[in-house]
Length: 307
Image (cartoon, rainbow, N blue to C red):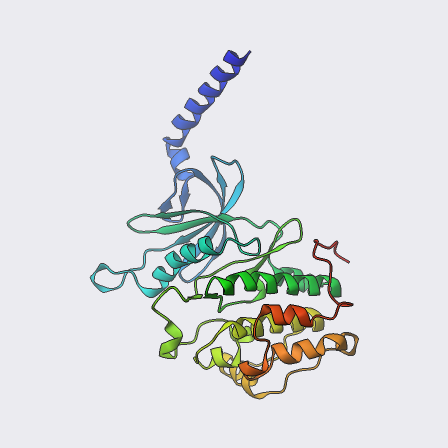
């Protein structure tokens, strides 16, 4: 019986090898212009300025994965430009953090024209989509505390995310969260820091006042972005609205911290500190924030059933 099964497996392996070298087999391993052996292309999920995101199937694991494929981007004299370099640095950063609150990366590949990351696929989608559908108060608090703990691990590794927003918070089937997209992150281990040149990176709706003005930032800037998301999850609207990015940046620095609906007044002191205009007025770190959450408002550590 064992010999029969072994022979059948050998025949299947041979058949798969033959198919992979066929035209159809090779086409199934193309992700845009990149040929990525060992993964079957299912569909394109999203298109970005620097890279495209695809859904694929790992041949070895038999599981769905996400493949982030960067297009060919070169500066003069054959050197990689900044956007492509940041793509490669993302792998180094995430591999070093190793936290359940951060996306799992499985593989990095580089060819003459492309680079790609193979990562965890989130069938449950992102926090942005879940917020549109509506969140219970307990779920909003659970998400916020989970994000805070993920930031704790990120900051301990000497990394600032710099683009924390609902679209970069992914949801697993068990209800846990994972932060993604470290392409704009600042890594203390790297000598380069684009913000030192006054350049602005991030998403205006979620930027701290100092980040929006190209000033030096630290962990308190990421916590400000968390404060924006917490306000949005509770109030079901963003704290500041404007018709253009520069007006939003102005409001983050100049307008008063908005008030939560009366039903959530217990959380207003936390919002006040997270969204304080000066970084020195905010929580120093995630530990200080978590210690300030009222016990009556803190959700269980275990994943919650949606209310």
